[in-house]
Length: 90
Image (tube, rainbow, N blue to C red; front, side):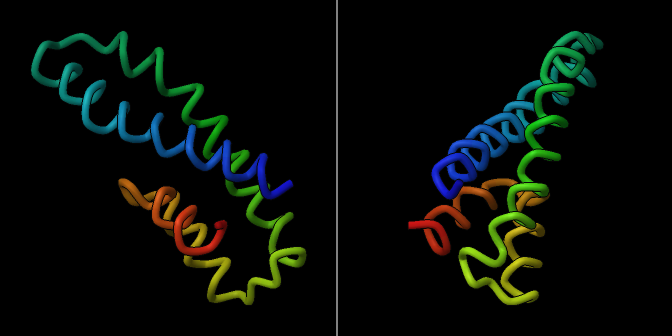
């Protein structure tokens, strides 16, 4: 389960960075929303999967509520999921 969470965490982080730093600027500077549409759904699915897996891993990883909150907060911060992988999952 931890390995699956690490993979989802990595993919969610990559999809968020692509969406935030590539797709959104293209949408607003070049008036082309196709990249946002293409990356938005996979990112949303990965985000929801990340949250569900974080809840499922709370007990096996012995995370208290504060740690779980940090893990979840990291999902909305750029590069946050990479920090979680390094600090809590290795």
